[in-house]
Length: 67
Image (cartoon, rainbow, N blue to C red; front, top):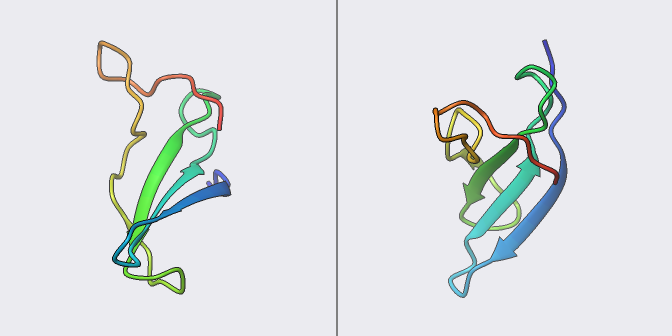
């Protein structure tokens, strides 16, 4: 199931590395999730920094988020 990965918000660090927050989809019970990726430059290649949503509830589940 493709959950859409949209609305990237990049931050370019002084060394040129890019950290990207993005809408990681609605696969977790209809909750919108935020993902993080990084790359050595804006051209990529990008590496996913976490397989799960970066925002979590106190019990460890994916938290509701708005990108």
